[in-house]
Image 1 (cartoon, rainbow, N blue to C red):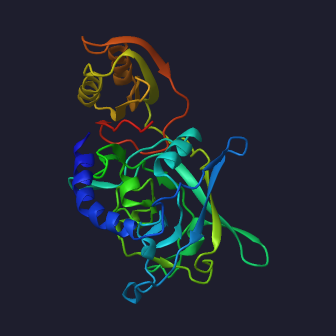
Image 2 (tube, one colour):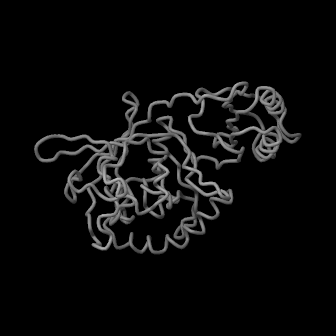
Image 3 (cartoon, rainbow, N blue to C red):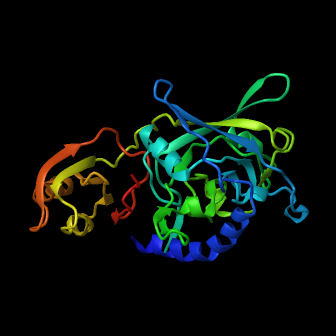
Length: 332
């Protein structure tokens, strides 16, 4: 577990006690099964039920909202929709659609890094008593600074992180403990999806579009679709990008540290991570000559490793790759 996730877990221990107490008094998932998540492979989308959350529970918030979606027992009083889904099942369904988890927004030194990961579009479907409606999720959110609707965005699948359940001692997604699913701001790093905009660094930026949001308790269907592939980024002249999967005896043998050390020595950008299936995945880019040397080193790996296969994966990254880093293993 990296230092960022350790910090998140420390913050989580503080937040989870109050959240669990709230959950116990809620009519949420206690004693009930999670709602099913339907994955439509043909239409390339997933969907699950929810309901419109009660607004202005606390008048001092003046309609401010921090979450697009939460679970029962989460921050319902600052959310737009409440959805009784299992975060792990939702995580797996997003991965099944080909959306890759990344990492939440964070500060590194004097740099503020926006959330990274695969992109998704979120829609809300409901019947207003006269007709069936379908709207982009952003339509229900007002930007209090710009005094207009939040722009349409592709939400970032940050993936949450693993933490110990204080009741069972088992490893679970942090989202399952804190019970928030999609955040409008960057302060909550436990959610599955985050707002991609830099404005989301301000947790008080958004409020509810009360004119559009269905009345409290209205049944809705949340639909999530992979965002269309972003246009391939233009690399500097003489640069090359690779997205690779390395198989063999490559976990528990220092392969990621070997990759990190060589990439940084060569001035490359990107990331490397272990995968649940025993392989190592990485993306890297940099000057062609350095990339050639880097790939030759990957074919051998450290002395303790045994590289059996180096396979190119489809698709170039749409994200701006920064200093080479080791990323968390995605949850199965």
